[in-house]
Image (tube, rainbow, N blue to C red; front, side):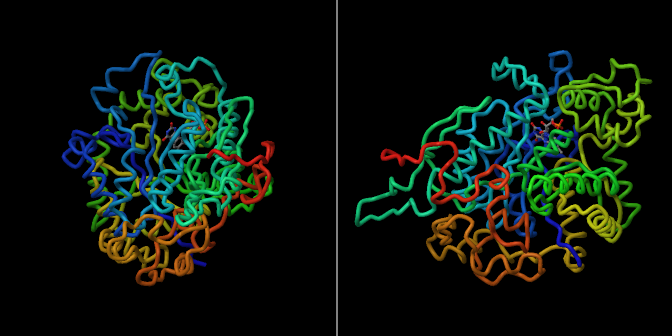
Amino acid sequence: MTRRIVLGVFEMMNPSNGMPTWTDPRGRGDDWDRLEYWVDLARELDAAGFDFLFFADTYGYATLDGVMPAQVAAHGIQFPALDPMLAIAALARETRDLGFVVTSPTTVERPYATARRFATLDRLTGGRIGWNIVTGSSQSTTDELFGVTAELTHDERYDAADEFLDTCLRYWEHSWDHDAEVRDRAAGVYADPAKLHRVEVDGRFQRSRGVFAVPPTPQRTPVLFQAGTSDRGRAYAARNAEAVFIQGQTIASAAAHVTDIRAQAELGGRAGTDVAVVTGMTVTVAATSPEAHALRAEYEALLQHDDAAVMFAGITGLDLTGIDPAMRVVDLRTDLGQTLVQRYARQNPEMRVGEILDQFRTRAIRGFQITGSPTEVADEIEAIVDGSGIDGIMLEPTFGGPDAYRAFIELVVPLLRERGRLDTPVDAVATASRTAVAGVGGTGNVADTGRSAPDSPVPGTSPVAGTGAPPAAGAAPRTLRERVHPGRGPRLPPTHRAHGLTARSGDSIPPPSPQPSTQP
Ligand SMILES: Cc1cc2nc3c(=O)[nH]c(=O)nc-3n(C[C@H](O)[C@H](O)[C@H](O)COP(=O)(O)O)c2cc1C
């Protein structure tokens, strides 16, 4: 069976999206901090039928021995950066269907604030929000910025992240019964106090008590993405994630990854397919193969060895320039990001430290690197998806600006659509579509689209997912959850089973008291 591909874009709200390309005219050095730049990008992706725009993010920045190397500021290496979450409401206002996935760490945030921010966005966007859960890159600088002194090991950070998510889930799923928000003007009752429940968490890492301030939202829980694929990271994903973001390098290694995550999910009592796996991918496409390769060569010429060393250190805490180049990669030890080190160690157990930077310079933390004519690119994407079991791809920009996405939309999307790999999008200029859904004078928000019960089926939407057929005219937008798991219909996130929380309404919240609050 031809499998549909979930399609996203991988972005960061900084001058260069991770690769120091901001000086190139095709970059976004002058645009990255303009809201209009992101609005235009979101509109283009929405009109082209992309499922989501994903923002990686971190509070930290790369350091060597606790100090920011000069290149970080001088070359704009993931620095400076804005907080992408604050732009999402504006981007959602200007788009109709596009989902938004925002990265937020479990290390320095507090669960209640995170739960409230994502719930607010889910409500304001009509259920188009996902959370990329991370235990944090550049963690040492982040800890310093926040004054965090408790030293947790790599695995303890994931233990704390389990409790963090459990706490959020209790607020999202259990604090309000689905029919608690009555908004009965005649009776003068906004919400039924008997249908609100106190949450009580008294864990090793998290403590929180009270009633959630945000009423149920279209998805209740944002779609739970996770990135971080060390052994402990995968266990976390298998227990919690609805989608895992990986940086696939080869079909074989990606397939091993998919198999492992699905097997671990099944051991935990979930269906393996409950976890969608999405890989990053840099596509350089042009009308002919030689043109595409020439473009790729221009791009690679911009990338410097020294910058690569700084980026690597920022993620792993390891300054490769100060380590014996003949040392075996498998012997490297770090308590920060292990995914990257394991990537090289798994590739070749005999690989030496000196070889890492040669590869890392042009690939950095990115996924598959694909270059070619439209047909070559479409063929390779299909081979990757079918050969690895991956569910989706997230495009990474080359020079930083929107050109790479535009070339993909123009040259590759039509081929993938013809081959039944992508849905046909709602033919939408955002504003016109919003009016069609909301009716004249509507706002296009959740209230106007008529979604009441969270995760309730929206008639006329999910049946088209995965079929390649366009949604009926005027059909309500799908939630992000329906897009990430196309064709399977809306459903509660599986995490609830994993967490022993089986249903939202009427259930007691273990271990909190069932006593309803009278003062929400
Ligand atoms: C593909 C990928 C993307 C990531 N994106 C982010 C990010 O945007 N922000 C962040 O703070 N950490 C990010 N991380 C770091 C992870 O969340 C994790 O904290 C770190 O990699 C350590 O866990 P690990 O050893 O399991 O990799 C990413 C990791 C991977 C593998």
